[in-house]
Image (cartoon, rainbow, N blue to C red; front, side, top):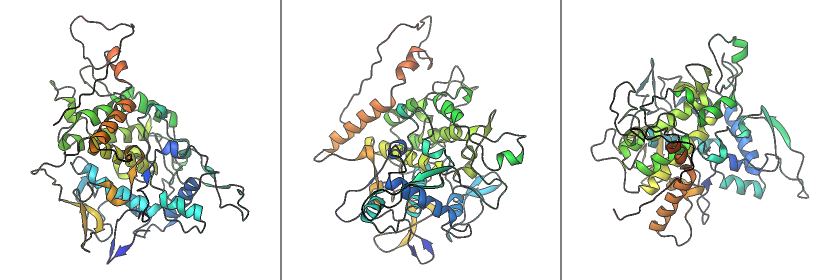
Length: 447
């Protein structure tokens, strides 16, 4: 559980046992492949998340208040901190959207959720060992194997989970419990259940108040999003998520362009010529799109909580999505180790990331800033794909991560070229249904 010093909640990260390697955040679908009936970590995660929900909403460390840091209720200071300073509609909120501190502000936010949500008092060694190794899993919605599908563990209203073994070591009958990943339910509010791509104008209250989910539409949106308003002259709008991830990680080396939509927003399709896509495809741009792909199409099919910034953090899938955003940030930092805030950047790398407090080595308690969270491994976690091999040099490590990015996320490039979807060809040249080679060339050089 988060410790408190003075009146503040201190975000430290989960402590790594002495002599043990830093645990990794795992891809959610792979992590949950082992059935909850036999997985200790999944069972602990489900139990802990429900206990987190059950904390009374008036408590600082309740799920309600922690989720509310991101958006609404708004206008409220959290943890006796400075009040929120960013306008959203008629309210002020903490979340730093459209600013270059967007990636770094969300890093301690995920640490807060990770540390609060998972704290086991289990007395069996196997369970406490698994609890010590657990880190918040990320949902990689861009890998081809996921096909854009929401992981199965989010979908059932109840789930069978493992219980401690009997005295003779044999497995006990699983326990059936309500699934907290299915929805977070406010028992005292009109909208009492989580919706994912669901609520339409005119739907009776009794139908939408308990939550509406349309997972097929989420899958279609992540893979196709044909409704996104693609203009023939727009180079990348509507591209598959994997293609955007590849381009972002391999072709956007400056922090100001990588971090936020605030420096170069997506160009207006009615005002040409465009600025280069490398300047407006940012981490926040991908993040924003996935909120829409998960939450719903605001123009046609009804929306769910993830589509709306003020309510997004009340959907538990928000945290697995943002763990993936933090992983993409860590991947980008790994292959661009010298890129960071410019000296004259605004906000700067030393601006405070309100309302997140940390106790520093000097003993001082203060807000995090972006420099403080630059090295994620200082907070007791890394990512499965970023684990280093023994005796691997920095050069070998970066090369291997670049290969991982290329082989994992660039599978759509050939289809883009073949269909001339990017308008890369001009004049009378026409691309037909013939077979073409799709070349990928990596050039490594000493910068």
